Image (cartoon, rainbow, N blue to C red; front, side, top):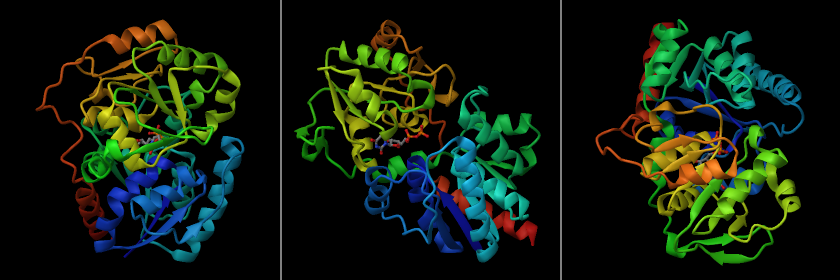
Length: 357
Ligand code: UDP
């Protein structure tokens, strides 16, 4: 049987790295890269470092408004699906690439498997929330990463198509987080200069549409600049121009985006994490690091226990205060599975295929 997998953005490459080898034991996989992320260090580097198979199609679509990007992707993905005639479409997460692929496949009556189904922020101004909800409601097999998402799917009447399989980001963390050593790592500043990783540092990632305004980003940087140790901040291309304009934050190391192996190594060795990324919040949790999330909605409720992950508004004083809170870790609390979600995903696909035929 044939599966067309569509990826397009950084977190999806990581999820594909966790799933692809397992998937290819049972299915012929055709891999489509929409082009949503295209810089070398946001895309190709992940394929190289994580040995992800080379995409069979690269659609080269990025930028524009949400509708322009999604619409162009739908047209191009439809062509691939008509040509390849797959038994399944496989998509991950919540990007425009996920939504475009799901809508194209649904109209062609191709069964869709959505990995990371049921994740809900309950915030309809969050663009990814629209992608998640629409994708889930046209999918045939909905695979949740944690209990909360599974319960959301039941509430939305999708329980009979849903299964709890665990989090593919946890699979990737288990598989890759010991590959790089912090003492042999170098960071490249935006200026091009190479530096060592400081002994003690905070790790910041920040790229969401909600935090790319001058006001919000300056508050976040002001907070990080005031801390007792420097902050390592790999700057997402979306924020690069604004960062260059915002001026001097001498206690922040503005570096180029790092590869996944470097990023998980930086997470594991950081004092604490500040982020607005969904993936980073879970990685902080996997690594037992205190996290402050600068968003006004919860992405992963499982992480919001015992001060392990706290929301903050983009206000410098509030961020600093939340960072100072100490967390309590219960070693027996493992809400994201056992690191073998890829096996469960493939098993679910095999079983569902039998039911459909
Ligand atoms: N990440 C990375 N390099 C960086 C910053 C982040 O590899 O310079 C990784 C990070 O460790 C996590 C993933 O990218 O695994 C999160 O992706 P992103 O923040 O783009 O998306 P989100 O998780 O918010 O969907």
